[in-house]
Length: 244
Ligand SMILES: O=C(O)CCC(=O)C(=O)O
Ligand SMILES: [Fe+2]
Image (cartoon, rainbow, N blue to C red):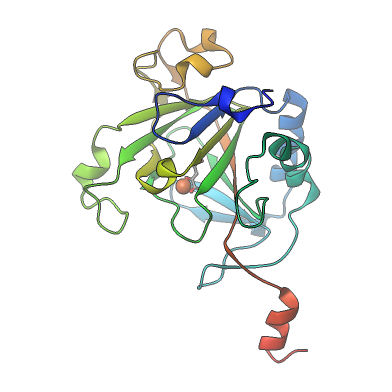
């Protein structure tokens, strides 16, 4: 793992994006997948095109996080020591992520182009598990309220494509967070892969598997680490509710 995030910069992208292959080991990947699979069923929110876990809890209607620690399996070794060593959240308000979304995509599933919005410090650190997937980035300009205006907009060609290998880390922040939409196409095959079409091609850990220019999707799970700006102490909340 590089000690300096700069060595991992995706130079073909506007500021800032960083890609680190083999960020976690195969053993760490298996432990994480097993923890995710063994979470009680009510932990999952089932959406039409994927399912999702939210740790430590969903935000309130005012985008507030009720303060609660992340479980140790989401903290060690990803946040502590690795994010800390790389200084990934050093400039975010809480100097560490306090929220993790876990998305699971089966082949053919994806996520519509969207932006992550103002509830978070503009930085997302994504660890990919289980299989590779292509993340598409779209210009935001022709969008209204951050959402595609039409079906045609949704189908339009991405401006950039990032290939996320299993066990890799992708960090997007700044302009990449605020000026682009990101999405994952609902495909069973990711194709047209090569140095001209994949902006992090030179940073990939194992290009050999992708030299044929395409791969079949398998189940891919992502952990997206973020810093929620507004945090309420649970003690205060209880007081607010008249319970203490
Ligand atoms: O699975 C991913 O890598 C992206 C997930 C995402 O965009 C989100 O949860 O907001
Ligand atoms: Fe997102």
